[in-house]
Image 1 (cartoon, one colour):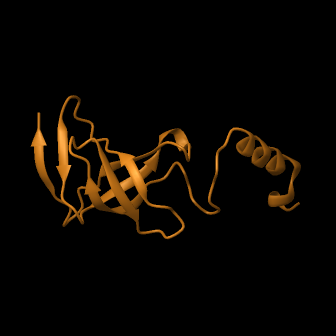
Image 2: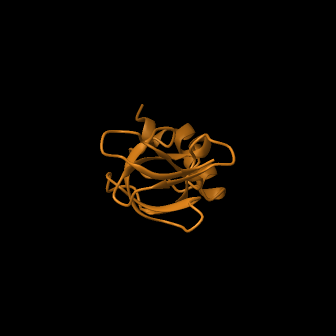
Image 3: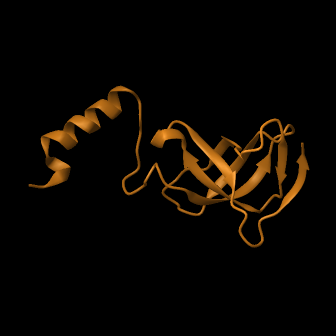
Length: 109
């Protein structure tokens, strides 16, 4: 049986549409994807990103870094990892990638 045409797959699509979840075929919303930092807001809590994967739209996302009460400034042009809270396409976030060339320019504790 073709899974894409199965009754269960149709029901899942119907439920996602009903609650407003829009998905992109082939994107794993529980995974992380590289994205370039375009800019960061003044309080360093959100940033504009442009994903490497062209199927994913860029936009403004919150920055998560695991340091409660701290702020992190990430260099423009650096890479972060883009993910989604609990696999929800409506809840994107970014985390520093810490890969070679990625740079944090300011850390306030």
